[in-house]
Amino acid sequence: MVYCRSIMSDSGWKSAEFFKDVIVRDLSLEPDDAYTITGFSIGKANEKTAGYMSLIHRVCIELKLQKSPAESCSLSYIVKEKSDSAFGGDLVELLSVFPKECEVYEKLLPAFECLFDGRAPVRFGPKVFKTMCSTSCTVIVMEDLTRSRFYMREKSFGLPMADVRAVLKKMAAFHAASVVYRENGGTASNLFSESVFAESTIEMLRRYYDTLYRAFLMSLRERNLPQEYLKPLVALDGKLLRECCNAQRADSSEFSVLNHSDLWPNNVMFGEDDLRFLDFQTAFYGSFASDLLYFFTTSATELMCDSLEELLQFYYKHLVSAFERLQHHNQIPPYADLLQQLKRRGVLILPPLSEAVAITMNGETEPSDMEVITSEQPEGVALRQRVYNNPVYATLVD
Image (cartoon, rainbow, N blue to C red):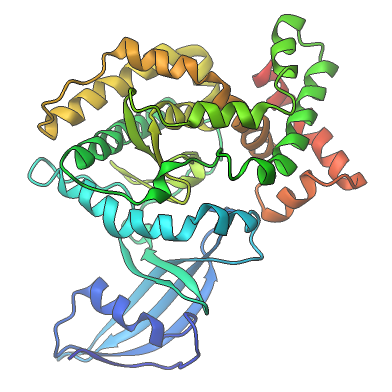
């Protein structure tokens, strides 16, 4: 039996003891392998906020393997922790984000990746070594991708064309695998039947989105946006979330995939010749248009304006290629049908355009910023004015 001598014995996950089985899995230790943990520390995962409905930590561990001769080893892991203090924490229970993400990491991603075995291995996300959902703590322990030289891009918006194409190629493979998985009899829980925009969430989200959408509209009026464009946007005031809910509702007659649902630069780690997706807390089965519209809006806004057709055709080409690799024999919807799905759901660009894009382009990415920006206090009003009148953002929107 593998045994370990640790230097800490605190309760909860913030102890070396908690990571003993993680180390065993990570290093593929044998029953008679022994080791001593000589260092243990917990810090911030990175300089960017990786998620708003949880806290993200990096755990660093120093250990000595009791071999002959003895070997020292440095390890690190990313820990995602449920917290009531995180921005968006009130949605955590309503959306069941941790049970959903655990199911993705422990069940769905490994199954999707196995579909590609023998046809050039495909990886969609980080390895997960341990999950725990209890009254005392709820955490997911994942591999630290920086150990394999994966990094986030410095900018939280405006990815270059090469990165956009790389994400679309991976997205297409992810979508194709999610379809074949279900056609082969694979199952997913009912947690994946609804998106963030659902009947159960509209009232809670309205307190946040309505304030920002009205500030967005005010900035458009102040810049004298032509009425032919402004009028339909104004008509959605107070109705935007309902329209998005309708757009996200599953249609059994349409091509349905597992959407990541939150693909933006902070949820993608880029390696030398590959990438990984992070943060599957809002994944759901529905139209592929949700992932594409969200990704284009948050990560390739300028490219979407100039090269939308080219990017859609690139995605479709790799979707067909992924189905071929998976030996999928059912009919694939023609490109024209998928294009119509996208057009019918165009309203889905407005929440990220009036929220995530505006906020990240102004550099407001910390949870404290997000709390202030919806406030009716003077600092909240002033922050919204800065965000929506940011010249770079205004030029992009106009």
